[in-house]
Amino acid sequence: MTNNINNRGLLVDWRAAFYAGLIAGTLFLVLNLFLLPVIIDGDSWLMLRYIASILLGKSVLAPNYEVGVGIVGTALAVQYILSILFTMVIAFVVHRGGVVTGAIGGLFLGIALYFINLYSFTLLFPWFFALEGGLLLVAHAIFGGVAGTMYELLEREELEVLQGEKQVMGMNT
Image (cartoon, rainbow, N blue to C red; front, side):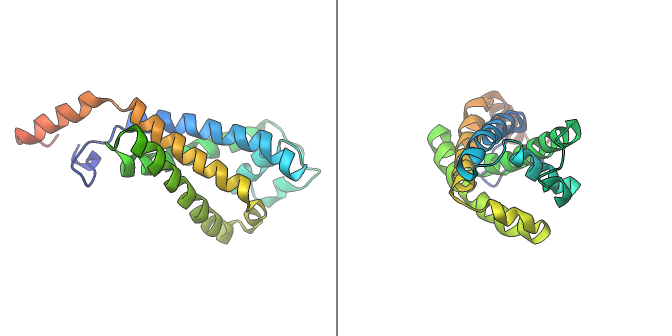
């Protein structure tokens, strides 16, 4: 289990990161599903179609494209996979900093994630540049803050004690 030890020598609780990713990803999705249509005067399916377009291509963004189970399922799968992966990165960085550090560190990492996503995703998916703006920036910041906070709240302390005892005893399992 030495691969689960971060640069400060402490075990990251990947289970907590997984659930924190689900929670933060759900909030991110809900914010975008309900606020994006209000701000850009579009339909509430737009964000799901954008997320699904990562796997299905930009044809799903056409105004006359019918949103069905395939679009929704693909969008949800992509959304939660990315949310969990991004939360694992956030958890690795804010691990053992406490709830306040998790919230503030996660918020700043969420903002960084916005810029990384905007300028890396648009290389592969140029149509994502149309989503650039304050709403998505705020949604990423909230995602990061919630991911960091939820990770710290869900983290199991007994895992760190057990791992620390095994390292002291010379066992690296």
